[in-house]
Amino acid sequence: MELKKVTWPKYNEVVGNGKQVFWLVLFVSIFLGIVDYLMFLVVTYVF
Image (cartoon, rainbow, N blue to C red; front, top):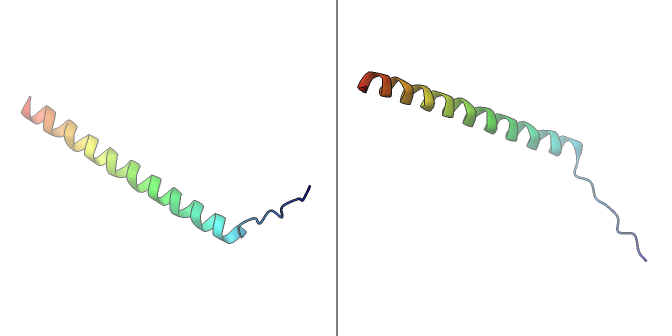
């Protein structure tokens, strides 16, 4: 039974990807918040 050598990704790569994902999530959440607020303004203005 052979033990396969586990190759862990470099720490810097993991941190870099984590930062990218973090900024992406942050950007999307802010964008959705702005859209939600604009829709709220439109609905209150129309009705």
